[in-house]
Structure formats: C-alpha cells, structure tokens
Length: 51
Image 1: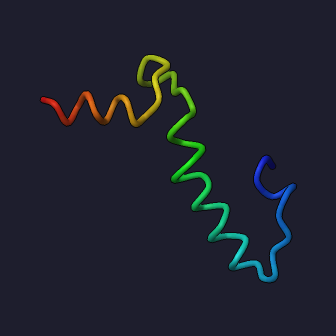
Image 2: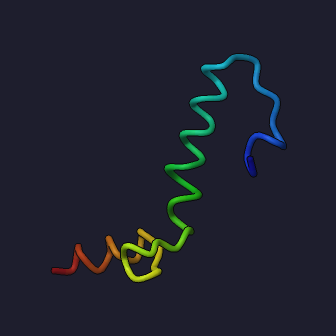
C-alpha cells in the first residue's frame, strides 16, 4: 500500500514488476525481522558472510 498509493501503472505487469522491486530491494532491507532477532536482513547476511 505504501508504494501503490503514489504510482499509476499503465499495465498490470508494470505494477507487478514495480511492487516486486520495491519489496525485494527496499522494504525487506529496512524491515526488522523477528526470525533473526529483530535485525534487518542485510545485517544478518553481512554477519553470515563474515563466517
């Protein structure tokens, strides 16, 4: 809802691509996840990469 309220899409496919991009590259990177100790996924991945 945060994304689509500010954008008008010409096609359903354009909407799907834009929403997917938003979820994958913006929302999931800043959102805190309870499954990983309320840390953003980027932080957890960086910690895992150090191992």
